Image 1: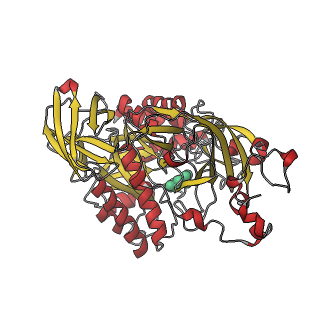
Image 2: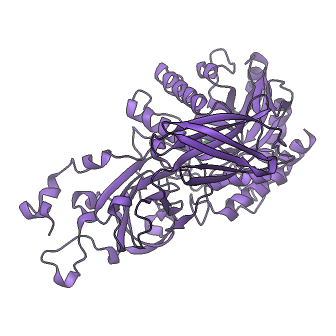
Image 3: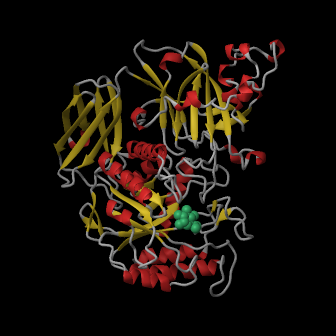
Length: 590
Ligand code: GCU
């Protein structure tokens, strides 16, 4: 019996303010610990899981319940750990059982972990790759912290609540779509829920490196190092890139340090994805990263990689899998990139949210360029300061996580957002935040066109390095004349990437002429699109929409049946459609 129940065992039935205690102590980009090159103890594997549609666990404080066996209960209870199904973490509950497919609510994950204390001064953190959408972490009944945002990593400190021997770890995850969230409640992808990326335990010294970065200066003649420590301490950090015979010291003042060291490097590029081992040591901690050094910039309407114009031959990808939902395994990511290379791509748009950390790490090795983005998608509560704080935090968590990934060249701050003053302020702030945190990369967003002038024109473009243009002439608009008019009318003055264009096709569905949902029309669509895109000098790239068919609850015709069928490959991630070869030919001949 908890103290709470002692006074009124039914109080929880009337308490609608139950969540308030958990709106504090949220993990953010400020508390994120860089995982790179660290030994982490995996907590993946079998966890108990109980769905909790009405947040009974918070109302009745399941996290406080002791382990008295049912035979000795004084009063009945509504939760017991062993009664929860055993599920594998990471996973999405939607694809684990048919009756959980459309579940949007909360779930409790519980597991035990044995703990052997180490050095007295060490600090212990729990690290989560992502949980969609919100998470609360409890250890032995104590609330450690929570997180908002469905696709970015977060860390909570466990040091004060771990005890030798068995410890009970509980994570509450909820995937409700809400007006004030990012994204809001209307999306064109499946709203998977769960602890769907890796969970690990980190043992760190009292003072540790929260994050460290190394990037090439714009003139390419030096490497700029930056470090943030966990505490506002001062001292000297030691830097090393052995292959370049680079050893240097960096002054750290009140927890922050940066230094620029002249050096000559082999530039990272798709043709030669050269990576160097970079070691940063400070206050007894060390971070080891494999980093590629390159520059990315714009000049007029061109995008320059290492000072040379590059045309981005791209494809968009979602994190979506028939079997795994939003879980991205290494094999799945490598298959994605293999298919992109078969297409002749040098570029992928990771739509519409931060993808698994491995995606950029593997793209670094494969020499693929990436557009990474946060899910400021369609309608957002742009006037809500808490929503802006959530979006800004997701952006900062993404940037801090992938700061050292040469493959990432563009931070995308949104997608197809109606032009209002509130949206302009909100997204202008995000673009400025990206530039401030990381001046070494370009910013973009999928903008809308000005339908009155019929031009590529969006007030937001003034805040961006590259204009993303999502256009579906020939699909959502019956013919291509609008595209001809738009491209002829426009004079954007900065690079444009066609950040989406595509048409649905059901694998095996054939037809002659413009018959929607046939492979033949999807193939013809790309011929007509690519001819026009190629003839437009200010277009510096294309990210075709998209590689694989994917689940979405808002597509329910007989052709779609809960899927968006614009994939160049079916949802089996194997069966190619006619358009795959057409786009391959276009990219080859480009
Ligand atoms: C939009 C949107 C995508 C969507 C696509 C489509 O541009 O950005 O998320 O899936 O169009 O209609 O298929």
